[in-house]
Length: 285
Ligand code: NAD
Image (cartoon, helix red, strand yellow):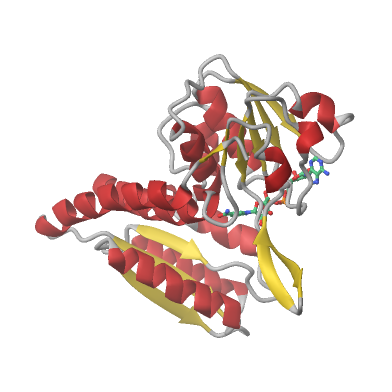
């Protein structure tokens, strides 16, 4: 391997340290930052995810509150719960655990979150502000991929950046962040003709396609910086599982100048970004 690793765990630790210092200032002013999570139903994965969120939040001095609703509640009750969190002056940031049970409209629930408390950056207002180059709570994964690139120290301005993926929570906001940093941005997606021709032009290549091991040696030019957003649990043989990204790491590490590993790249930084957005929301509140 010739590429230098972009260490997401170390970057996340630095971000958490900064968040903890800001949270301490708020606590001193008796305005403790608080993240509230609305969990509807009893999906085991969601409950476990909320437990991990709580640990991360409390670890940096952010209070955490889990509000539970039964899985058979109706849309009116769910919207009422979001409204109550919006109106609660003690709550700085709100997450709605996805997916919500069948019969509820997860999109409508997320759009109901007050923009100032939308710490996952899933609402139209924050995406709109981001598109306008204004101060916004950016979607955490997009912000994390961008931060991994910034952490290389390489100037983004003027670079050819290629984003593979155009989802609302990753690809599109990532392209906006890169435009804001004055990169020349190409966005690729499932209907893109000749993906290789585009990715090979990238000096900064971001992959958020959700396809395990999509990007290989042939897609990457010598010296490119490669940020892999993908995360997948796949069979490792012997009945075991392993985590891989959208990039064939071993191949691409031989040609890239710097690359994020999976696991240990964008993932840990995403969690840190949620904490950073929460403390930022509390500071403004
Ligand atoms: P998504 O499925 O919503 O979007 C995937 C995008 O990739 C689509 O816009 C699609 O057009 C494009 N795409 C798919 N196949 C392609 C192909 N062959 N060529 C070109 N474009 C292609 O996924 P998402 O929510 O944006 O997530 C992307 C990846 O990031 C997933 O692997 C997901 O697990 C991962 N993810 C990681 C984190 C993290 O914290 N690291 C957080 C969220 C998502």
